Image (cartoon, rainbow, N blue to C red; front, side, top):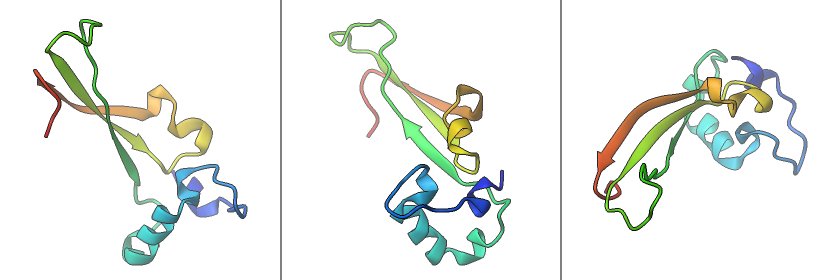
Length: 95
């Protein structure tokens, strides 16, 4: 869970979201959070899923998935480290 603290960044190469400008900006703005390497960084993903397999159907639902970004690149995108936090049901997309 502390991989992102010991990871060596290679210039101009992004191998993990940790290497991105947004993560670096977050760390500079919230330095009190980023100094503790055991704090958990989560990514929130949402995508539409049509259970009937037809885009003509009026019903769909939206799974909301959390991804732990503290793990190395080969582990953070594996299904066993992705957590389904909620499902938004409905006849159309949220919002």
